[in-house]
Amino acid sequence: MTKELKKRIITSIALFLLAIFCIFINYVIFFIAIVIISYFAFDEISFIIYRIIRSVTNWKHLVFNSISIFYAFAIFSAASIGLYILSGPVFFLYVLSICICSDIGGYAVGKKIGGTKLTKISPKKTVSGSIGSFCFSVVPLLIFNNFDKSEYFHSTNNFLFCLELSLVCQLGDLFISYLKRKAKVKDTGKILPGHGGILDRIDGIIFAVPFAYIYTIGLINYFEIWIEVIPNAIKNQ
Image 1 (tube, rainbow, N blue to C red):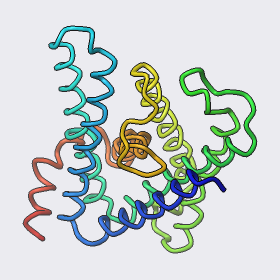
Image 2: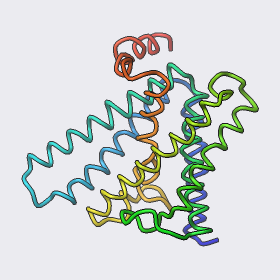
Image 3: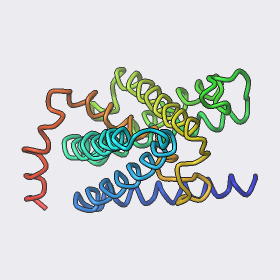
């Protein structure tokens, strides 16, 4: 095992334990954690955008930054908080676990088997790694089903949900990889040992969580949480 891989594993375990703490301690801590993560995600993607379009006019940079802010704080944050409040912390952890297992499967299988490259966007990603991501994404369903017999974890539709969420994670990962390639940077930051930046770790999650929210709650109710659900949840704390 290489030194870099050890760093990656230790950082991943620490982040997962921290995530569990923030998810289950209480709503306020979870809300603060999401805001902090959203800020770092915006800061790092803003840096990438600057590297890509630094030769063009300032107004274009402003437009792209505005889009990044809107996504980080209005889409990702609203989806995270909405999914947490309406479906519960256990289901949020379930969604997060699918994303993590999908990432682990892609990395482990792709590293072990290798083979045909998946795309030119990210040369290290392979077809075998993509298949590994789909296979590993089902692991949380098998685990959670043993502890919780609710509709979330005891339905054939949830098998498809795992695969769909894995697909969104992989596409999100490829999209951020494409931006990094255009910006000619390896990582979005250096805050996480073995991983790089926050965005390097959550590149698939920031797209998967909104997808999971829309999948379970529905698109029509997406922004209603800011008007009704969130204020009521804060009052009850």
